[in-house]
Length: 107
Length: 117
Image (cartoon, rainbow over all chains, first blue to last red; front, side):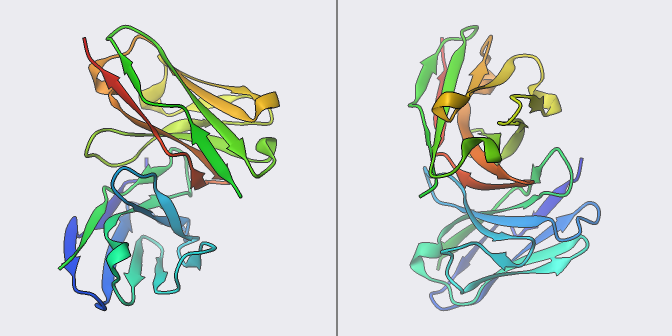
């Protein structure tokens, strides 16, 4: 199975700050990577797919980049509503696998 | 708009069975597969498998072979997850998610299953 390693496990950011979350795959996943945001008691919401494509309705302050085994999610200006847990997910091979999550809080 | 609406929370005893539903609307049900994902309390997301909504064929991840069953009621645009012989470790929230190729793009609200004697 492809292992997804996310970092950091948690971070806090000030309003307006730029935030970056990293995800590393155990093998090349050829940009088959998605990012999700999950708020407490809610289901995950798709933010980014294909490593860098923004899902409809997602604010443009979210962006994704990367290739091969290394990927990142950037929030260009942290907002209060961006608090939550962020997961990466590889979609190259079954079984689909997820990163362990990054908890993002407002400082 | 695309919606996946799941059934309500469940409280079961060890050894019992539970059936969770996931009703889809806003798209053609048979054009997309349906994923199932487990989230244990305070934990991450674990892929359970998927069901081909055109053929009804289920595919289970290794950890979910045996007691877990995916099936459909296509006429009602509904997918089901049944868990038999419930164990304490099955206590979790279970999500259905529309499968857009290998991308779970829309998710149900989740069903919390509590297993307690």
